[in-house]
Amino acid sequence: MVFKRVVFKLIFCILVFLINSRFSFSQKAFFNLELGGGVGIMRDLLDYSEPKPEMKEQVRFSYNAGISRNYLPNKYIRWGFGLSFVQINSREDMKLILIDSVGAMPGSDSFTDYFHASYFAVPIYFGYKIGDFCITMGFQTAIGFYHKERSVGAGIDGGTPFHYDHTRSWLHFGEIDYGIKPMISYIMSPKISSKIEYFYGRNKPIFTGVYGWRNEYLTIGMMYRL
Image (tube, rainbow, N blue to C red):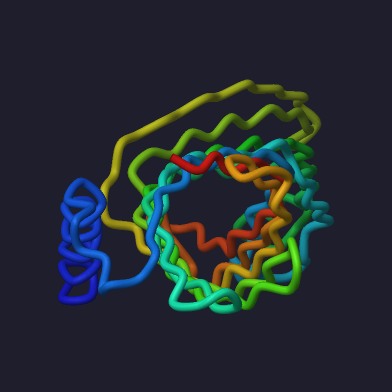
């Protein structure tokens, strides 16, 4: 709970800081509007009991958008932070062997889960500029606020076939994720830069009280200098 309160306060302070742009540490400073799209995956970290299910995770289209504040102490060094919206989508195909109370295996359940998780994220980064390229290493903390899950499946239980298509969604502030976020950007013009970035989550956000995930995404995008 203490960590969550710290993250909420950090996001609030950064939002105030972004609005008040006069604070520049006597360095060259500017804002960037950022937009990126690519692939994401939510890796299932649940420890399943025996017999282990057959499981395949697949990437899905994911994206992010936000604003960042950038500082240039000299012509080589760049550092900054931002506030962004992140949408991570993922797919998981699974086949479970059903076991009854006496240990018999009367059937199976094959299904596909589609996951959608929305976050507010705060990246903080430090970079080194080489010509028109900038190599950046960052750390990102994110707060989840919305989750949607759709399960489509069919199987057989005791000789009786069944099928289903369930969708559920919920708002839930407070699920924390954090991890590293390296990025490479290229200056295309004085106003426009392209970028490729990767996020590797180190926490295990638990939206449902049961499932734990590790979030990852790789996006390619553009930055517009204000």
